Every structure is written in C-alpha cells, then in structure tokens.
Amino acid sequence: MQVKLEDIGKKYDRHFVFRGVSVDLFPDTRVAILGGNGSGKSTLLKVISGSLTATTGKLSIIDDSGASIPVMDYMRKVAFTGPYTEVIEEFNLREIVDFQSKFRPWRNNLSNEDVVELTGLKKVSERSIANFSSGMRQRVRLALAILADTPILLLDEPTSNLDAKAMKWFHELLEQHIENRILCVGSNHQSAEIALCTSEINLTK
Ligand SMILES: Nc1ncnc2c1ncn2[C@@H]1O[C@H](COP(=O)(O)OP(=O)(O)OP(=O)(O)O)[C@@H](O)[C@H]1O
Image (cartoon, rainbow, N blue to C red; front, side, top):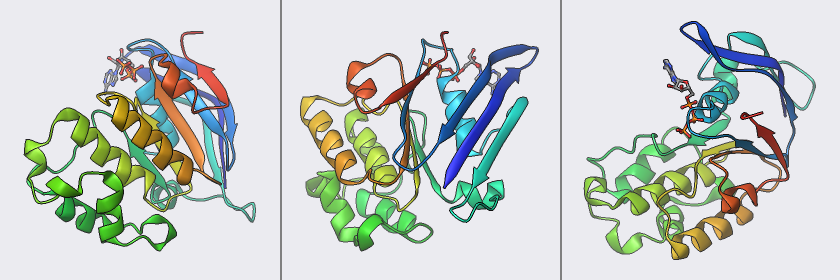
C-alpha cells in the first residue's frame, strides 16, 4: 500500500494552517510530523487518516496491485490515536477490547485475552476506564491502535502522560508490531517520539 500526499494544504475559516505538504508513505516508512502547538500536526494526521478532507492538493491511496482505494475503504485500514481520542469511559478494559474486536481484528491472531495482557493493565481490567489515570488511558489508546491489524498506524503525541515504565512498554510494543506498516507520529519535538522515526515533516518550516 502507498499513501501519496501531493501539495496538501488545509484551511480553517480563511487561514491556511499549512500548505505544500508532499510525501510518499510506503510500508516501513516512519515519519515524524513536527511542529509547535497549533502548527497543524493533528490536522495533517487527520488528513492522512482520510477523516478530514484537505483544502488543496491530492491524497491518493494505492493498493499493492496499483489500484486506487476509495477513502471509505482506506479508513478501515488506519489505526489512529491521539490524546483527544475518546475511550468509552463506561467500559472496563476487557469490555473495550471485546468491543473493538467486533469490528477490527487484532494483529497476529491475538486473542482478546492476549490484548488485555499486553496492555500491562490486567490487574485492573475489571475497573471502569472512567477511574483510570491519564497514563493508564493513554496505554489503552496506544494498545488498541498498535495491536489493531492495520497497515497504517498514526500516533499523535504517543508519549504524552507516560512515565518511564510506560515509555519502555510502549517502545517494546511498537517495535514488535511495526514491521511492514506505515507509521506517522505527531510530535511537539519530543526526542523519544522523533527517535521512533526515520524521516520528518516539519510544519514550522
Ligand atoms: N475544526 C477546527 N476549526 C477551526 N480551526 C481549527 C479546527 N481544528 C483545528 N483548528 C486550528 O488549526 C490549527 C492547528 O491545529 P492542530 O490541532 O492541528 O495543531 P497541533 O499542531 O496538533 O497542535 P498541538 O501541538 O497544540 O496539539 C490551530 O490554530 C487550531 O486552532
């Protein structure tokens, strides 16, 4: 699969947040989207995800046979998470894992029980997500995205709210599940996030 952005720009009201973004994303591309607050990182990730339409330019999604994929089909191939991604607070961890599994399979045929185990939160898996700390919620978001069987993984500020132990957990989980996927990481110049990537788009420039 290839995701091709050509001269992409996004305008809210009368102002462009960014313009002239061109990049080709292939399996194993790992790109950091960098910029300060308000520079448009989340907006660009939403455009790449297909959930937001660009004002200018072209987004093409091409499958391995060279055929173009409609955006609605493409969106099913994208796992996307950011600090603003809602987790259903009424559910406990087991319920949220069970819920996602009904419409999206896990990587490597993992079972729901495996996924609960891999979050590192098994001990509190019966506790309502509403009572999770912000770091625990971030673990849940990251696990649900990383372990989803999708060729495209978009992580906006993935290390926000993670302590040192959780950072280690995140790095290990990602490294085990990143092969052959497209990875885009939105980052406010956090070195731990930039280190995950091999190229960058700097929106400040
Ligand atoms: N739906 C919207 N309507 C109008 N303006 C918006 C909308 N969404 C974002 N913006 C504006 O677009 C700009 C870029 O926002 P965005 O959230 O993409 O930035 P960001 O780089 O991710 O910021 P941060 O580092 O603070 O998360 C901001 O000025 C924001 O106010």
